[in-house]
Amino acid sequence: MYVPHDYRPKDPAWVLDVIRGNPLATLVSNGPDGPLATHLPVVPVESTLARGTGGTGLVGTRFHGHLNRSNPHWAALASAPRALLVFRGPGAYVSPTVYDVTPAAPTWNFVAVHLRGTITPLPGGDETLDVIRATVRTYERDHDTGWDMTESVPYFQRILPGVGAFRLDVTEADAMFKLSQEKPDETRDRVVEAFACSGSGPGRDVAAAMRHYS
Image (tube, rainbow, N blue to C red; front, side):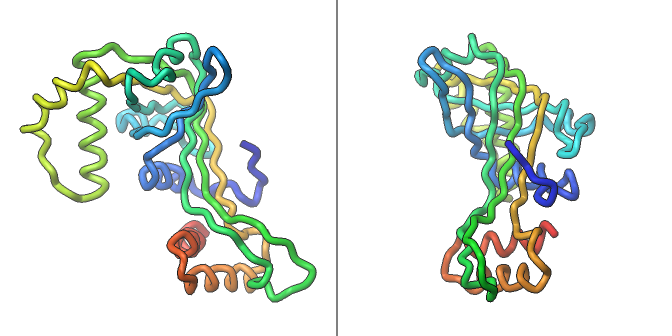
């Protein structure tokens, strides 16, 4: 992903924040007939986060995910050791009407994170069950629901033969926070206000991101 200097994260913590807030990633890798893409839940392996390096703080970390074994993408992972995970944060259209200057051009404000790395399918059984449990624990913590999975573990075990888990070891990480940083402060403030007052949920999310990531 090409990231102009103005749109790089000022703080590596921003990148993990986007991933935690938008954990339904797109997994992209090569298949026998071309690229394959699957939308699936992904979580970081917490014990690896302290060793992350680079501008995003994620090079050298590890992520776990899982998908349906009936998905052709699962079979293709065995012969495609390199993969890309895409996480998409808030995004919305910016009309030149909010700039109050002429000439001007429309654009799109958005946040995205790309993680590239080596992908390894995991054996079934306990290793896959561990990934499912870790995924549940992460989401229940992040969504503050407090659900106890204990009574559902036998159900997890019954559906386990249909689940394919994997790990991705991150070798490259890019993050783009395209939030009108190239504009003068007064223009950026008008963009934030326009999004905040819009009737659009995505617009309000972008306004919040512009305020938070600044």
